[in-house]
Length: 442
Figure 1 (cartoon, rainbow, N blue to C red):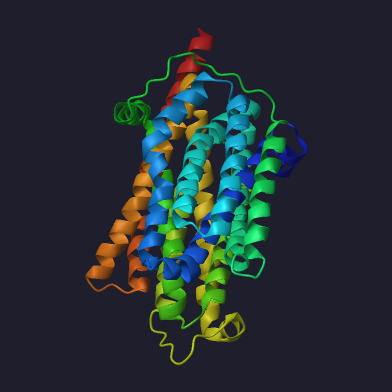
Figure 2 (tube, one colour):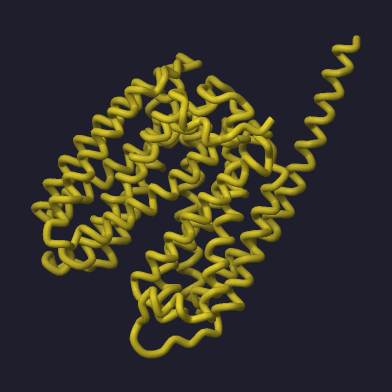
């Protein structure tokens, strides 16, 4: 039965967790984008370093902990009461932000990169907890709605954090404002975490510290459950597509539309809003039922709207100075591409939310955090794959619209593959239901 997903925001079993997650993602992106902008326009030049190399290194430094520590994070989250770990993580976040404030004030790039690595570790340990704690606090028919709110909230927090970090850091008092803000948000995140209801662990197995071996083990454990592992692959594909779009927005705005950085921000805003709309639509479409029925349609939607984006924009020939957001919106030739930049992420939201719910609901309670950790490792691999694939396509002469078309078209076979999986799952469920009915009759 469908439940009003927004009613969850009135409950203690969801609201404090939602606020804690929102503030954590917000802080990550305030800090990351402030660091990127300050490095690009100030620190690199003063230090005589290559800004592009530093920014690329920063992206790698943030994602590296997902490879190094996900296995440990999953084991810890399965073995220790989860709200205790969240409290520790939030205290560490506040300490990191205080050190980051010193880094911003002194413009010490190495200290800032060390803090960025620490924030990556923070996110690595928080990820398995936030998704494994949801099924402990929500009923089965609330999982779709809860994940929809988390998905929408995450992308909006990314948007707000990116905007605030990027727009304010170069202002006269920007360093002070960003420093105070990030520390205050970390403290607020700790305060909200104190209201999260307890979430006892279901396993007491010892934590194994062999990173490479345990990373392989958690992925192998996820592979034993076909529904779960295929959901992980589907989620990871979404992050490959999303990472490609988000990384190419600056190039798309400049080279295709002849637009400045305000239009890049506008693209990011539309994309985040679209993901939020698609995520929230899932609960209405599925009526609270955990099912992959509409996931293939989400993949097909991403493909179709990307193809329309390509044909409505690839022949544009920008000339002269870069235009701002006002001129961009005033041009009717840009309206159809803009609509696609909303509909593509709407389709993405419809695609991704059910997969998270399936992964959570069909994971073993005692090892759910390890499954989430395996998902995080696969997500990171696919996002790195996105960067490598994009570089290869650019190297053989693809334009940015060609790259997006290539990624979009691959969603077509992905959609048909997922459809076959959904049909097999439905057949298995029907057989299991018939068997249970026969047992009850007997």
